[in-house]
Image (cartoon, one colour):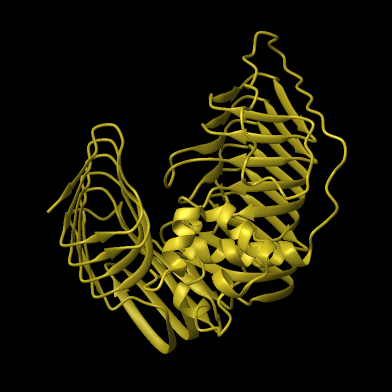
Amino acid sequence: MMVKNRAPDSQVPAAQKQQLDHNPFTDSSEEVINCIIEAIGQENYQEIIKDKPRRPTDEEIRASDRCAEQSQTASTPQETIEQEVAEENTGETQPQDPSTPSPAEPKGSTYAQTIVNDNLIELSGNQVLEIVDTHYIIKNNIRLRDNATLIIRNSLFEHQKDYTFQYSLEAYDNSRVIVENSQIANACTGSLNWNFFNTASLTAEGVEQKDCNVWVFTTNSASTSIDRWDFFGGTFCSTSRGVVRDSKKVELELCWDDGAVVDEELPTTIANFSFPNANERNINFKLDVINSTIEGWGIGVSPNSDITLRNSPRVTVSIVIGFPYQNRTVTLEDLGSKIYTDQTWQIADSKLRLINSATYGWEPNVFANNKLIVRNSDYSASNINSGTAEYLIENSTIGDLGTQEQVKMTVKNSRVKGNVVARDNSVITLVDTIVEGKIAEEGNGRVIQQ
């Protein structure tokens, strides 16, 4: 999955951005630099600009890009602020009042009301939570079920967290999320997902993405409709339906099932694009992109698939070593950001062919009781490993790492630019490895440093 969080969780590679003579962290206007500091934190900013600076993470670079973009297109702050909450159950716990303003609040803006909520937002039945003209800060999960609805209108809706996937928004059943003429902010401390399952839906129009982007995951028969959301990022799977129109610098991931046959060109400037085409098989979701520009495409190499991409200039590749594979061992080497004239990989029983195409990221993950070995590579992330799988990484540079269930991951002589998170009963062993982000343990997960 492209978690940016996508980046990635898998954002635009830092190496490509830093080829520019202009250093946004030192050469920008005071307004832009203040925006960057607010987005990434004063401590991180000082580490980037000191005499012997560290290399900015991909998320920090995207935050600097977004600050520059916002400076060019700054709009007049709203004058009137109010929040309306309509709910079926009058006993619903109300969000707490804030004690301090949020760093994501635009300079010069005046909010009559700011809400800081540390508690779980959980809506069910026909409950509706409507946030109107409010700076709303959420520091927990959001869960929607049944026919519940979350409406964000003319507001700044800000996620705050400490590390990748600490929190998420999840919508099930026939629940809905509606966003209109609002800003969505996500702290640049790792990826955060909005996940839509069953027949849930997201409708968003006129959205400005602040700080780092949230990632929208749409699966089952859920649907997502996006109109004018620059920097939108999303994954489409199963029998879902997606429409993206009039949006810039979008990142999209195509998530097909096992046995998919794909032969496609993935352009970056689009008037009208529909997927899948008539020659592709075993693909059940549908995506239309209209009058938009693409910052990057994500594709997956699932078991028993046959994937060919032609003339596709910005692609990140997710590799899935999982069911129906059992006790398989796959070795991958020399993954990185490259241009491929014509190269084919045989990955277990799957095939990937790139013709006149360029990769800017790789995301290999392992599941069930299989084993994955990655050597001498520079890749985006690997966050969704599960089962009883084994994972060995050697002499590599990685964005974020995460494990679930009973995975055993060993990382040797490597560098992790983002976070390392062990969940459930998984174990991550770091041997002579540098971690630039946070190290976190959830449940019975353990991170061992040697």
